Length: 405
Image (cartoon, rainbow, N blue to C red):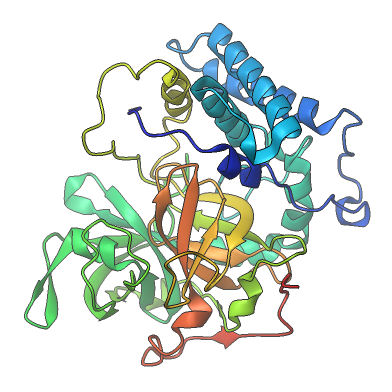
């Protein structure tokens, strides 16, 4: 459960407080209208409501703790408004504001059910979540195509334990991370040998019993460097796996974005994206305490408790690109992007999808980060040479929707 990880910084929280543009009335015709309340009040009210709804299902979370979290978050917002990223925030204020960002609708998380997302989910109907609803309405059909092609990497002999995510990119072929492959297979000479029988389930929806399972047959392409559960921007954390089974049930492969500029961040609004995957329960950091968190970190424990049960099921989460290819320190290969969609315990192998112009084209392959703080993905457009041997991948491009100056 909760460890003692460092809280996010004021600068990181300021980035995550950013919202997509206001929804247009035409995009929400017949839908809810924006609240006249100030944005800060909307966010705090929405967060308190969501956390108390989650807490109602738990006996180990007291409402008074949630009230204190929201009060500390309010103080943090006041400090940030006055001092920006130079604001000095107490640990309780940092974690309180983190809890608000996670639950106020500014970075919503929805379960995929019956092959779609619920556009009338309460988190999308008012406050910050309303802004995401506009894009979701416009791109609902594209979202449904994407979620059908996202599967969980699971081990049937261990109760279908889920270790990561994979996405269909060609008939019978899926794309995932090399570090996911390392969990289930070992290198023997120049080939991978399975340590466990593994499957891909393209269903895996919350409260839905259906399955669409294929067996992993072989690895056909992988990054040349061992990952060993570490993050190194110089290493290609990618693997392509071949599946076997009734391919008539194989989902329609996803199109990959050909232009890296699609996720370039410049002076204008940051590009919008969404992530679809199967977040696993977060591991404690090595050496982290397993008992009561140290003073000021108790809100982290509460937040993890409230989100229990969200792991291992297909989820959809929108967010904003924080940096594109070549814009991150140490990204000398110019093939990494960062985004702030909620990943909780991590979505290894999840697809990062354009949410600004077409709603259905994969722009990134998520490979790591820190839960609720920062997320890293390979920019797929920068991997065309590495994926050239895989056919028939569908690469697509049009006039780049770059916000670069």
